[in-house]
Length: 124
Image 1: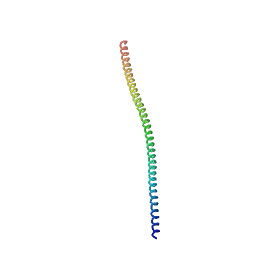
Image 2: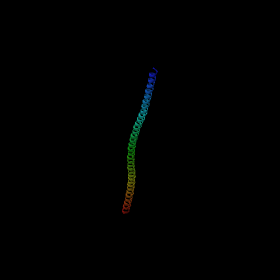
Image 3: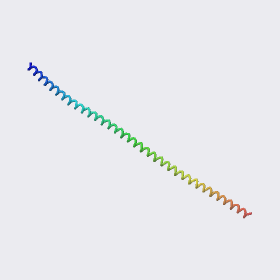
Image 4: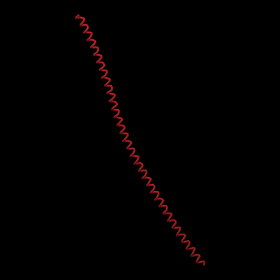
């Protein structure tokens, strides 16, 4: 009976050792899977970050292109404004010259009328 108990005890100890080895092996596999899952998660996260960076870069490029287009339009608008102001000044100069010519014409007409009147007075 004692021998059977010893055999059973020895067998149970062997089985316990085998089960402990299996548990250790499974825990090692579990740790490996956790590391693999973490690495895959990290890889996916990095790809998402890279995608966001590329999208941000693309948006920044579009914004820069729009800024350049707006600046070009602003420059063109300033040129048109400057030309309009220059034309306005030219129109004012022409109007002033016309006013001066009209004033000179009136003076000349008045002078001509005065001379004509003097000439008539001398003739008479």
